[in-house]
Image (cartoon, chains in turn purple, red):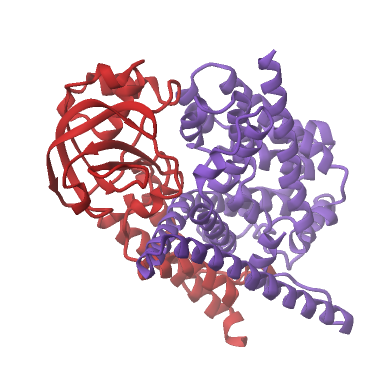
Length: 378
Length: 246
């Protein structure tokens, strides 16, 4: 996954507490760093050559290049400016959870077993109306509070669709009909299935070391009632005043935002680059078949990286020309995974887990879309 | 980089970064160029973002903030540069709405298909008088008709848009376009009218024009559709609100 490699180079190295500097480990790290630099250069070269091949074709020279760059920056800022409020809102909620939610509450009220956990997690969006940007800091903070894995994964995938705001916007775009019902039902189902698959894994396979450590502390200390002193997520002592606790939660919100913003920026850059270089018309003219159309709409949802609160209006533009199954796949898959959100997942999960988080919904939504197309064809 | 990881310094950098972001968003909001990037309906969200960023920045003030103990809470130099990148790019490239350069790799919409628009928008477009209709309203009106080329023949048109010379068009014709944005410019899609104007070649791509004329049956790329036969084409300033909202 070059996408992740290239972004990981700037922030990852100092951010993650690596194991003690054994010689072999440092050697491996150095090699990986070279690999990253190499892949980044390769990516840059590919992007440049793509731009230049356009340039030669049109022969319009520097002006053309400047206009392409201008378009790229405008689209990049569009995605970024649109997502920042949602990320800030998610970070604020995350900060409040860190300071005001007790770990034992999660322990007491949320189911521990996989299936009930997945079901509850997928429905949690009704209470926390978040889109795919805001959900990431919230889930990470809940994991640090010891949230069971399956609840978190189901919440992460389903909340961007199964929440009042998105349900309302989908209704106003499509009205009561198969697309409206299908979007909600299938988002819920796919989130539950992926969460069940993820619940087979151990926390240390699925969470980044720092998140996992806090997760582990939370799990084990919830029973002994002695939160470790070093953990920043530990509630302040009872003497701390409300003002101090609010300041603390704002601090944590800021830390969250600044860390996640990095992933948002890289994701927006990639999405904007794809839009500038890949002709949308080429993508749309590829195919209308029951299978290809679904893949095309999934690719489009991934590249566009549009917020789930409004993507229903966007999907409307394709409703007439594309198969119903493919529009449904756009509506179900897009909010779960797109370029910018999958990069933000990297702040919670290691790369392998993120790859699964992309591939599993992709496959399931593809199956759903194809099945839908074939059934309606009969 | 010992200085960089010192708690006081970290707090200051975080606060300044957030203030910088808030200031950037505020300036774009104040001069109206924010809507080159996003749909107007996101105005309230951006206001919220400015307030929240300032609030968080203030919470880092010395004496109140507690240095974070968590390892992943420290802002690294690389992380800082990434976060500042949007501001940097925003200052480097003066704000400008999408134009003809972005049309090259997008699907042009000259006649939307039957089901692809909000019924409410189509009704609203039908109620407007011909002279009031925007490019988007015209396309909505075309949608409702089974044979728009014939049905709308003779109706007067008065629209504003930017010029694009599509390679498929013959001499003496051009496209007048607007982008529609439902969320942010990432989902921008163009709506276009074919305009017949003898001096079409003198108008540069991206220049904004007001076109007055009459609809007549015509074709684009082999498909029959209404074409504006222009009576008058005047260069105008770029509108304060360059996009249309579906």
